[in-house]
Each structure stands twice: as structure tokens, then as C-alpha cells.
Image (tube, rainbow, N blue to C red; front, top):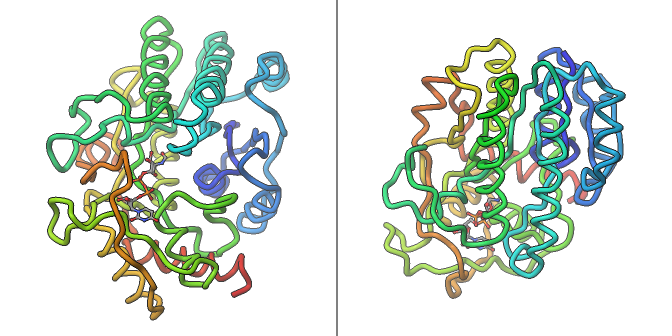
Length: 339
Ligand code: WQD
């Protein structure tokens, strides 16, 4: 079975490529290297002992997408990660996000629509829920007006896929709504490699622990939560990667009740910022220098998943803990920084 992974050299994409290869799938990676580097490719090959096919390509170039699928007529599935994902950047540069996240999706779906049968996994996000009214968040929670163009591209992306599936019975698709992916593969050969200043909490924690950053700013401790800091559902990226393989296998075996569905992919457990900081200190023995500062605009108070649907329909649930993820993130940081 040949699976195309767009954005396959990215943080989540690379971990999915490893899991796919280890399950015996032939993988073709498409990546434009805008937010990844070729070392990731070597890391994947070293972990699995299998060199994936790789095509450097920008999916915004419609002709390239058409050419690719005319050369690879035997594609059994596509897992689509290629997109920009920085919330703040999307506010500054919305058209970059609408072009890069939506045009590319349309071009790929246009090629899949031509096939006798096609299987498609879409990288979505819990961002679509905004601040949900009830915790844990189920898939029935209303999609709220997006707080950023980035979040809007995930909402629109899901709607595009749903509309196409409605008129394309041969296209089978699943959207996976990730909560907060963290950590890295146990080998430390692949992991989160933020280019420039990271936005996300865990790389900022590990860069503070190596001394690259002076101090971690904790954005607000005046939230209505037990310790006042915001709560998220931090999922180990390897568990997240495995969810993609399980979802793909469901599509390939035609085991879904409809040709479009979507799932929350999280641990089902909420952790506050300070709980993550404390867990990091406990797991690594490192003392973290942090200070409480003002809230970050746009942050929601809490978001953690109800994982019943993924468990009952996909037969998937997380196996790794927050501590496992933080330990792997620390090992990765030390590895890439030669710390
Ligand atoms: C987590 C918590 C911050 C940095 C974002 C995207 C979401 C998804 C995951 C792509 C929050 C706090 C953070 C820091 C802090 N990305 N924090 N100090 O905002 O939940 O989600 O990444 O799909 O779409 O929105 O993740 O890691 O930025 O923040 O206190 O230096 O850590 O306030 O409570 P977030 P995050």
C-alpha cells in the first residue's frame, strides 16, 4: 500500500511516516521544506531502516500537484499535514494562510476525486472548538467562530472535505482534531524542531532548561482553574501518530459507517501550565526558571478531549503519559543542542 504524506518532514508528519513504515506501508513524502529540514529525512530512515520516497514540492503549485498524481497513479491514501500552523503569524498574514492551507487542500482533493477510490486523512485541530462550553470536549461541541485565520483554515478545511465527500462516494475521509501534541520519538532522531522562536509551551520549557532562554513566561495565573493557569490536553506525538495509522486502516478496510467523519485526538486529561512545569521538573530533575506574566491574548481557559468516539469507533486511545512526553522532549532538546 502506497501512502502519500504531505508535510511529511514536519513534527507530526515525520512521526506518522515512521509509524506507517513500521506497519509495512510504502511512503512518499511531499514537503516544500518551508518548516522542516532534510535531517528529519535521515532521522526517519535511521529509525525504520527504510528510506521513504521524497519529492520536494510546493502544493500551492497546482500543476505540480496534477503532475505528481499523474506519475503516482497507485496511491492508496493521502495524509495531509502540509500547512502553516502559527496562530500569531496567521493574524499578521492571513492570505499566506488561506492560500497555503486551503488552495493546497483543494488541489489535492481535485486529484483524489478523479480516482476510482481514495482515502484521505486531514490534520485538523481542537482550535475549531474555541473555548468550548463543556469539558471534556466531545465531537458534538459546536464549532465556534475561529479566533485566528489559522483556526479558520482548519474549520473551512473540514467543511471543504465534507462537501466534497458528499458528492464523491469514492472519497473516504477522516479529520483528526489534535489537542496539544508534544514530545518526540524515543530515539531522539526526530522531534519538534521549531524554526526561530517557538510559540508552543513545551519547546519553550526545554529551551529554558538548556539555558537557551533565560526564563519561561507563564501566561496568566488568574484563570478560573485550580491553580489559576490555563489547562490543555497534552498528547504524546507518538500516540498521535499511531492514531493516524489506525484511522487510515479503518478507511482502507472500508470499516467506516460514512465516507466522512472526524475525531478528537487527545489524552482525555487536562493539565495546567504549572502542572506541566512541575511534571517537567520532576521527570528531568531540572529546576525551571519561570515567572507569571499577563495572559496571552486569544488563549482559551481550558481545552481537553472527550476521547470516547476515537476509542469506540477507531479502537484507539493513548498509551503514553505526560511524563513520558516531557522526558522525550527533554532528551530530544539535549540531543539537538548537544547539551
Ligand atoms: C499551551 C498553554 C499558553 C507558551 C496552539 C495552537 C493550536 C495547536 C497547538 C496547531 C497555553 C501557555 C505557552 C509560553 C505559556 N497548534 N504558554 N507560556 O495555544 O494551546 O495551542 O498549539 O494546531 O492550534 O493554538 O498551545 O503550547 O501555545 O500553549 O504559559 O511561553 O501554555 O498560554 O495556556 P495552544 P501553546
